[in-house]
Amino acid sequence: MRHCILISLLSGLAINAYAAEPSGYSIVCDPDSSLCWQDPQKDAYRPDVKGLNAAQAAQYCDELVLGNHSDWRLPNTDELRNLIDGHPATEPEGMCQLSVGGVQNEPLYRACQGAASFKGPGDKGCYLRPWLSGTCDRPDPPKGAQYLETWASNRPSDTPVGWVGYVSFDMASLGYNHEASYGDVRCVREGVDPIAELMQPENNFVPTAIAVAETGPCDIADKVELKIIVPDELSATPNRLMAFFYNDEKWQFPPAGPPDGGTDENVVLEPILDEENAYTMTLPACTYYRERVLSGNYRIYIQLLSEKRIPPMAGAGDYFWGSNTELFTLPFDGESHDNQIISREVTLWPVVRQ
Image 1: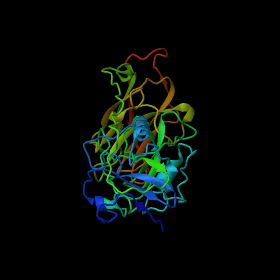
Image 2: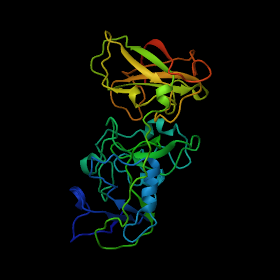
Image 3: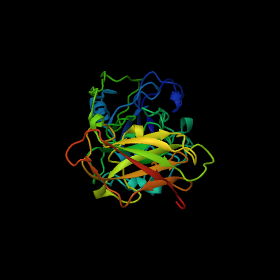
Image 4: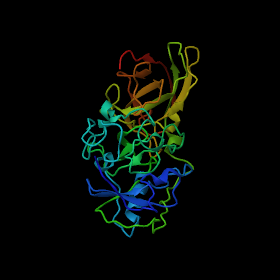
């Protein structure tokens, strides 16, 4: 059993003293790993705060001064796994093989996908060690379809550009997220150095501003207008519909990694889609965060999920579509994007086995 030192003790309060919203941070140290943690995570009890992207998270920890210590940093996935409680597969030495130096498709294995949301032993069902405080239910913008993951520092060894590790404490899952996404931040440092006072950070961190252009690559990108048909009568409203581009050089069926093209508008929650109602969706040939247009050969993959799945992979009771024969060469005219639109009608296939 792990034994921890709660560095910030207030008049003998118990280790879960922050069941209510705290007015500051403490430092919780774990002698077994010789790591000390910021507690709770940044802005844990402020649902109005959207979190930080990966670069901002690293900057925040680098600039953090807490308890007279300035050597705080962003933890890696292996270190964050020490904080998981209630799901052995993703705890240290668990069956999930995602680790520093791992590859991007590792989270697709069942062992890394976590457990049922909010069924952990921590406060409000978080999969957190009992000696930690914090939350795991801050919504992930822009659609709030899931909850903020906690950023790690390591990147997948096979695709280091654009992707960063995370741990999701609402369901004890591990994975890689796009560096422009938003996440929670809990900083770490090495060495146990007790002090006895409730602390506030000594720096006033302000995230680096991200310029958002009024127009971008998606405005001029060529597009595919999809008419999506489901062949059966559905017993309930599906959870989400997703359609994305995947680079042909990395294509496998079903895709084993994040998409190369399409935006958040190509994730539709609770779509009106059934045997009598097709769904029309426009899929732009640009990257998810609208950084650039796509060039080269791509294929399209579509999923209709009956329930929330993290990562979102079709399983029994779901529907999907993906072409092993039709390539989309972008831009369509072979030279430049010019908002050209082509139409495709596709009928989804049922998943007959998981």
